[in-house]
Length: 124
Image (cartoon, rainbow, N blue to C red; front, side):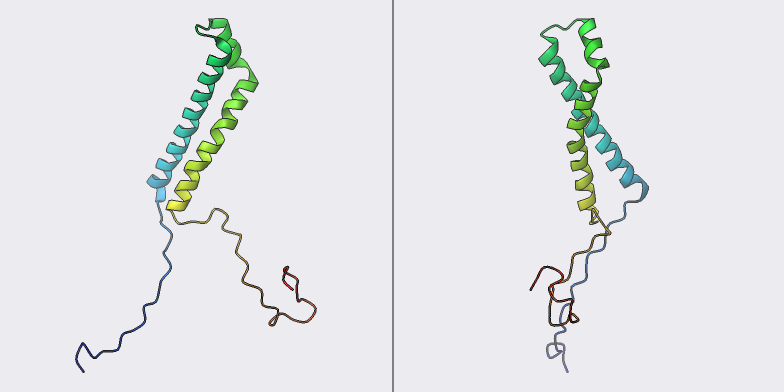
């Protein structure tokens, strides 16, 4: 039997394994997420300063804006989506699931379910 007469074996798709980043990869993405959060907070504080401080804010105005809890809270809330976006990108690049405990339900087949349990998952 020559090599051209050999039967072709079917290709079996193997699932891609998750990437393991260990210490340095986690550190880089953690610092990146923190940097994005700080940048978003600073941009929010600058926008609040421009909005309420005027063209040339005085030292009293700056002190008042920085010491208000509402200003800091708004900056933190605005920074959260940007930080979560960086973490989501890192999780997707690592081929991980965000909620590893949740599994998708298999398709329902009422023929294999025991009597009395048919339609329990929303199908009829």
